[in-house]
Amino acid sequence: MKKILTFALLLGPSVANAQTTPELDDWGFNDFSHTDIALGSRPLRETIGGVINIMLGFLGILTTLIILFGGFKWMTSYGSTEKVDEAKKLIGAGVVGLVIVLTAYAVSRFVLSELYNQTVLT
Image (cartoon, rainbow, N blue to C red; front, side, top):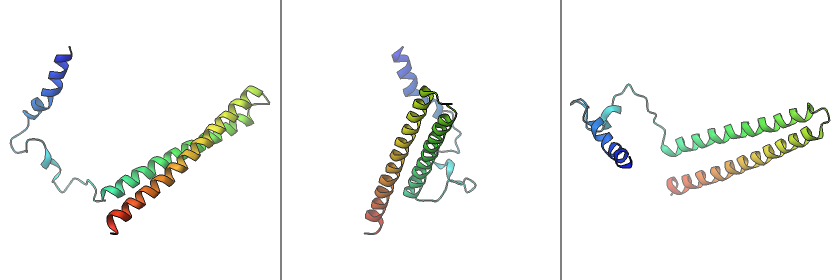
């Protein structure tokens, strides 16, 4: 079974390539050379920085929601010690997550700015 799977994975791309039309190149490199396709013109470092900022922003929102949910659970616990303890754990986990996200933001901001300074401003 492994031999069949290996054979299929190794020959799959060449079989798919055999079905291309003659006006296209072999691997499709020129498919994106048309002007009607907007791929973006930002440099790679700005794109990576934007993706990191979006991911960290999403994680920050998520940890804030966890803290709010823990507070809501605490307020609706009606004095039940089990529910209060569960809410405290949830708030604690949210605070730890928020500290991790803020630390990751600071580290990534420092690393990206230093990479930029070392590669551009020489």
